[in-house]
Length: 75
Image 1: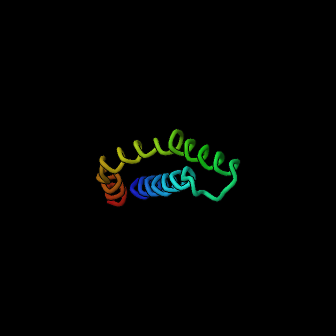
Image 2: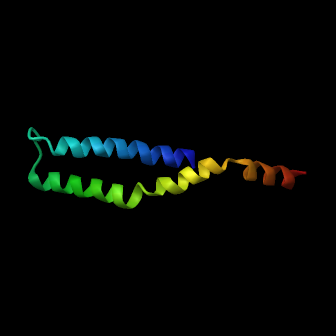
Image 3: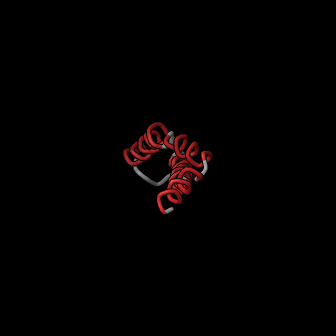
């Protein structure tokens, strides 16, 4: 869960930077590319980034249930 959480958060950081760059007046890309970039960022933040809530809950829950069941199975 921690790796998934970290990946989603890291990707959000870089996508936010890309969106900020695309909205600058000095942006060299075409208007179509800019709109596509912003639509992709909106999709990521609206549909994918909320998955971090589930992964964060998994991290907070700890790993005791994982290690306990393995130890019991091997005993």
